[in-house]
Length: 96
Image (cartoon, rainbow, N blue to C red):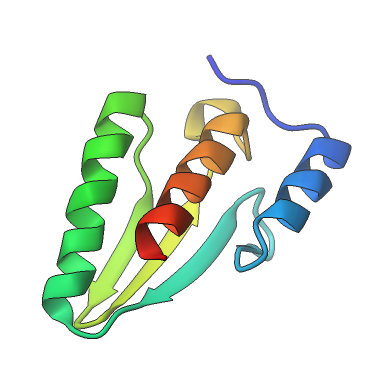
């Protein structure tokens, strides 16, 4: 089971993940990705799904046309873990 990040590790991770924000009232991070169209957004989600499945760590997300809203938190740890930071980093790379 993944271990919840300490407050220091949480702050340090957020400083590295510039476009991710804390979710108010919850130990989670979120980001909205925007793409040129639906196909590009779906491609991003498909590539992310393959990584998430290998990690056995799945995002909460919502898609409308070219926009993908993502929330990451490790439910088993009841908060943010290194798994969330790793998946967020992969997602940032896929979107760039």
